[in-house]
Image (cartoon, rainbow over all chains, first blue to last red; front, side, top):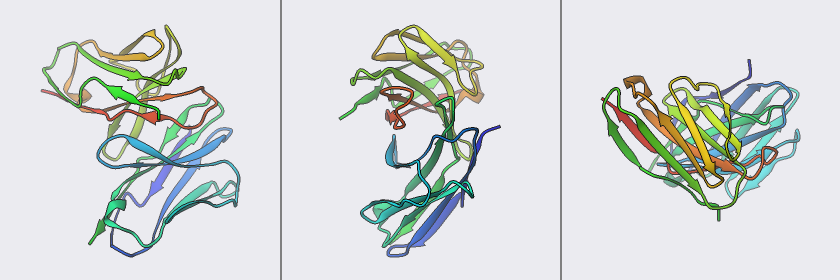
Length: 110
Length: 113
């Protein structure tokens, strides 16, 4: 059975800290891995990763995929209170279905 | 910008009522999805549709049905709502099955009493 596991489930840090969120997966015929940020409503797309070792970067956020060890990390540097959200990881399998992790709830304290 | 809208942000229904959740996208996307999101369980796919009048079961279709009579509109129906269907319901769309990014609506928080 395909599954995606995110860790930690929740994380509380102080503003300015750097955080690393983890996503590991067991999926039949991996196609891609996606990260989303969900604040109070709809998840919004952050990154899509398909190749190992190539870092995707957007401002203070970056992500990388390891297809050998079957995981991805999402890094956020110099965190701000606006980074508080649930971060969702999803993996697309050979049937084009997205398998979602449970999410990591990140709280940034001022 | 892709826009996905859902008919209600909050709904309160009684056990046994029939519930309709509507989702509309304005970007001519082929695929539309209904998920429910519960704490600790992440997003779980209920149904998806890859074309008008076409539908496929997701991981948890029991107790739900869907309708896609027009390309832009995808409805989720709870024939007889039960308390275990209290949840956040998210609709999403994507251009095609091969396109990786799904665009989400704001969600409908349903409470079944």
